[in-house]
Length: 254
Image (cartoon, rainbow, N blue to C red; front, side, top):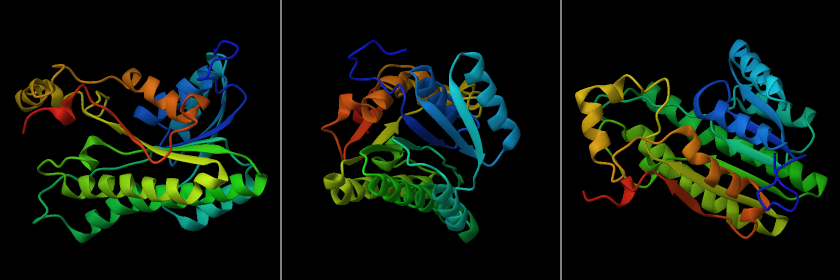
């Protein structure tokens, strides 16, 4: 828990985390709950959400699960109409449809943009409206990627969507700053998760790790400091920024 006077304190604040049923979203929800925030975990899988909430409760935190397709505008609007304003919103939901752009289907492109661009726009727009209506300040963190700042082969749709999310973050920050709503982007590098662990044990995966200046993958916990900076009063004069957490990958030589 946070110490009294801790700028990173989020105790008592209401937080929403999308894509929270697994991976980084589940970890982020746990971090915020461990520091006293009441966290709403949103995703499409009820069983995984309930399991994540149970773990938080066992650790002394408070959390609730909401089944929500964040790319569905009607569902997002209905959810925010029925909820009190959040203090912290983490737009974490995201997907990737790997493949060369010459072979990528229009459906895969549309799916990537729907989850990685449309969804954070819908959620942030509704969250900011609720904050303004309640007369309160708030922090929105859009989880982008270093691939929004630098491209790699075979992930063109994902890179384009994350680049768009970074620019959308800046536009939101500019428009909503006078309302006391801060909007920033968190840009992780290669973070080890259950989904990619097997890949990084292959020769191709190990070769990629060797290109990271710190010569290691990131862990979910490596994002905690940046996350709490952007979500708490420690970052109260920060908006429209992107924080890169990547072990130096972005500044490595081409």
